[in-house]
Image (tube, rainbow, N blue to C red; front, side, top):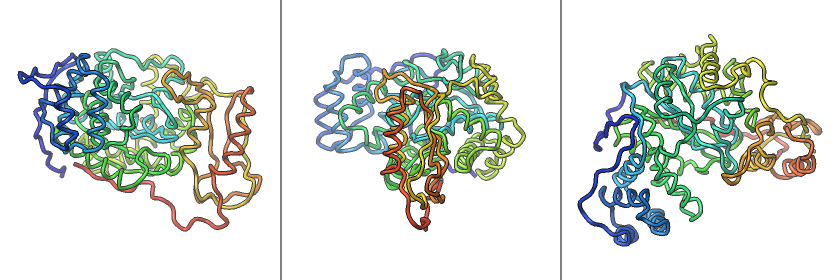
Length: 464
């Protein structure tokens, strides 16, 4: 039986149209609201909405928003304030509305080699779930879902929201990039957080994630919260705190949610890089993918199937997810999605149609041992340095470069054996040699004995 949900916030029913927050007759001042939060006091719904409306209209200056962000970073927000902020950011732009409880999306807090969206979304759709996916581009050491799918020639990630909604309802799945009209307040706020040291705030992270996801119109969400060396939430306590904040906020919006805390102390799967990750995703949909990537994907998809009411339990949802891989229905949905959005669906059967770097360099182990530690973030940054990611929004992506691991933590390695392959362009040989040195020196550590314990792939699963 699904747990009862708390509906303490009024749900605003809108179709695909701009929704302005209710005008508040009271008069506030930016300095007054900033001072109130600076002194550790609680803000009201009207105060938060007035401030966010002012930001999006240009009446609140960036420096004033920055001051409020720092006050929130230091003093925090309680459950109600977090929900108020989420609501104000959500209705700063367009909102899509669907009917029924079978519209479920997934969100990941990001990690190296995390291509699970391309696997779990087709699986869920093949099992009768409607999946509206509005994804982002990569920045820093983590790759972006939009960048990866755009390695498929012709795939359109920019669709009008009306067309996006129609495709979800008719085809069961659509994947587009974030639009300028979905939670525009979040875009402004995130840009300010990124340059003012206020990113690592659980209330601000919660409002950022939930405002965008609620705007998609899903009735439920499965959240993959990564923890470890390659994750934004580097420790388990931080990941748990974020998971609880997300569940609490979902409850206030009458949305069902399942949170999974998963490991990111090494890349997910073996491939890191855009085209390389598409290939690995397709192989996983064929039932030939890496064990960890396959397990995470079916766990998340199983949660989506369960929340959509297409299975009586999470376990039953996982069973259905596995069946969709085995009978080929999930792969067909993925191929159809590519075709429906203008992409070259033939890549599913012919990987040579994907852009791929022609040069392959093998990084060899300089000694024998067991892999005991992987600097996940460093590997992600190596991919960025090759052109497979971006450190600033204007950087151009090279879809064909990247890394492919041959070993995971706990695996035995012989001296001279290949640790990973680097896909690169001929002009990048000097850079690749530097990557080789870094990997052998510090990024992949070997021990004389096999590690006695390994991190679990999934730490915990909870529902609101």
